[in-house]
Amino acid sequence: MALVLTNRVGLKDSHTLEVYKKTGGYASVEKLFAMEPGTVIEEVKSSGLRGRGGAGFSCGLKWSFVPQNIGKPVYLCVNADESEPGTFKDRLLLEEDPHQLIEGIVIACYAIRSTTAYIYIRGEFDLSYRRIEQAVKEAYQAGFLGKNIFGKKYDLNVTVHRGAGAYICGEETALLNSLEGKKGEPRIKPPFPAVAGLFGCPTIVNNVETLSALPFIINEGALAYRKWGTEKSPGTKLFSVSGHVVRPGTYEVPLGYPLKDLIYKDCGGIPDGKKLKAVIPGGSSVPVLTAEEAEKTFLDYESIAQYGSMLGSGGVMVMDEDVDMVWALRNLSRFYAHESCGQCTPCREGTGWVDKILQRVLNGGGTLEDLALLKEISDNMMGKTICVLADSIAMPVLSFIKKFPADFERYVRSHSAGGKMRILG
Amino acid sequence: MIEFSTQTKKKLEECLTHYPTRQAALLPTLWLAQEEFGTVTLEVMEYVAGLLDISPAHVYSVATFYTMFHLKPVGKYHLQVCRTLSCALMGGERILDHLKKRLGIEEGEVTPNGKFSLCAVECLASCGTAPAMMINEKYYENLDVQKVEKILDELK
Image 1: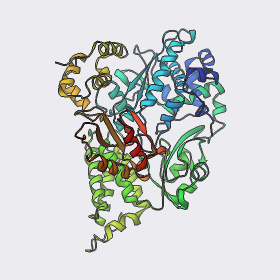
Image 2: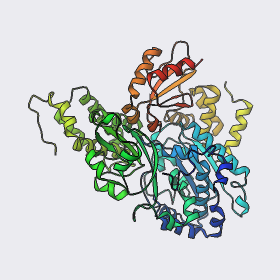
Image 3: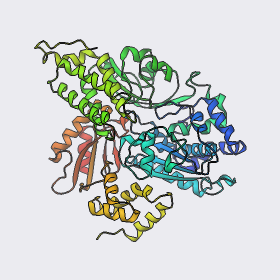
Image 4: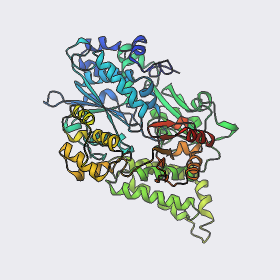
């Protein structure tokens, strides 16, 4: 259903300024410039909008951490480096409604008193890149970007900056390093980017989906946004559904929506009459849910946490009864081993070890002790590194083995017939 | 001695106006270099370092960190097949295997006539239209073996 973010998806030429304006685009601007920047921050805080890149942190609160009048420029960086496996929602917004994002950028920059924004877009996104470049160009020509935008005493420059293939650049401080022309290695926090970010200046990094919700919030007000969702998770969110469903795709639903309805109603259920086995609800980095858990949970930050998982980026990966969970986990471990930036030893070595052990198990050479070893390595990776990439494979490893023990034991039982049985702690 | 064309030099000058430091233009400059020279060789890296007043070692560390810069030549058609979970669930492995057989090359190799090169890549954010691959900059989605055959036949 189209509610806040996806109203123009599917309209002919929805990516053009002409269609955007005809359908109410850039209407929030008059209201915006009549407000004080601080009032804009308060409005966004009251809307309860939470960061849609994965962390779910309050957008307005994040903005309020930017120090003012310290004699340094303030930057906005748009995180359009969508790379979390199972997630393809920002790509939709970039391709179908780039002006909505630009309007969001205008709002965010005005609120944090920034006159420079960079859109960091993943290198592979060719169509998205061309669409957002074109939209930025159109906005400059229309006087919506550049000097004295919309005829107001306010300048705003926006630059589209292409990444070049590195998952880690979606991590906000890695993104900043990459933008500065360095390897995409995450930085130690604090200082947080809001205080010392891009080029050492106060910087806000916001996800494409977060910014795209702002025109609605300014136009209609925080209360209107709160019509949807729950008290703690207000508004709507995009969920990208992939894997074993009849109709995969990106769906906008109110937060708190039943995952069961998303899978069985919106996406048409599991193909070929098969049964559901597992769901990764928030992109590949979050703990997996069993079918039973998936059918009970609701799609808001708090409900999913009750089942030990996370809403993350909203990448819902659905697996039917035929999926071998050892094979699925090894697919993910290869991803993280490939994408570790190599800065921190627990991650650089741990992701590689986990991948090699899982490969051994998959090839029939594993023992029950390998399962205990996987658990031990994961425990030694969690929370011990600069960023959460290590946690992002440790959490799947621990949850896959805990929730689907039979799949793993089937592989190692025959090999461990020498009596090496050990209870997994 | 390599050098950017006048047109690329103009693009670089324009690009530099967007950043407070020359180093920040490194990724855009490497993109320009790849567009112009095809491959980001050591010679190209040294040239880029000179343009941006940074060390060749720094350019090397960055050019080799990101997967999209071609450090050695690729084919006229560079095939990148997604191997991550959502594509794998929908048969992505079969697509890669088929391409290897059909083209007679392994991942990371180029066909002897230089027409095709093949590699497996991580998630392309094309999970809802899986399995997917890229040929040069373009996405090809909802693939099966027949569709792949048809696509290859149409590439001249």
